[in-house]
Image (tube, rainbow, N blue to C red):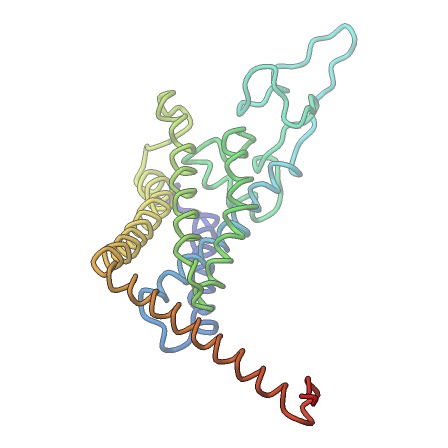
Length: 278
C-alpha cells in the first residue's frame, strides 16, 4: 500500500476536497438561507462541477498543448528514432503536426502535471495526448464549465429555465463519460490499470461514476418536475382555458375603459386636447 499511496496521491485527493469545500462555501454565500436542501445540493454540485472542469481538466488541456519534450529531428538520410512516436497516438500521427515534440502531462513540471501523472497510473491516456480524451475535454472545459456556472446563477436567481440548462448539462456529462471509456471497453481496456483497489475503485470508479450518478439523478428530478407540470396542465386544461378566456375578456374591457377615459380627459378644457367649438 505504501507504494500506491504517495505524497502526490494525498495532495491530489486533497485538491478535490478543497474544490468541494469551495463549492459548499459558495452556496452559503450566494444562496439565501431559505433555499431548500435540494436547491442547495444542486448548487453545490454544479459549482463543484464547474471548478473541476476549469481547474483540474483545464490544467490537463494546458499540459496537452504546452507541456512537451523535444525529440531528435531526423536528417536527410536517417530515419526518425522509434522513441519519437507518441504511445498515445496512432502511427505516423503527430499532435499539432509537430514531429519533433511529445506533448502531455508526462513531460510537464507543474504540480498539476504531477496530479495527472498520478491519475494516469490508472488510465494511461491522461499522461499524454489521446485525441479522443482531448476532444472531449475541450468541450468539457469551454462549454460544460460555463454552463455549470450559468446554472449556479440560475439557481440563485430562481430562473424559470434552470431545469432546461441542467438537463442539457447532465446529458452532456453522461455522453462524455460514455465516450471517454467506450473506446477502452471496445479495445480490451489496454490503457486501464485495475491491479489494485486505489486505481480501480477510487481513481476509475469513484471519480468517474460521480459524473454518472449525479447527472442521472438530475435528469430524474427534471423528469419528475416536467411530467408533473404536464399532468397538472392536462388535468386542469378546461379550467386553464376558461381562465385564459376571462383574462383576455378582462383585458379587453380594461383597454376599452382606459381608451374611453383618455378620450374624456382629452376633451376637457385645459387638458391640452381637442376642445368643443360652437
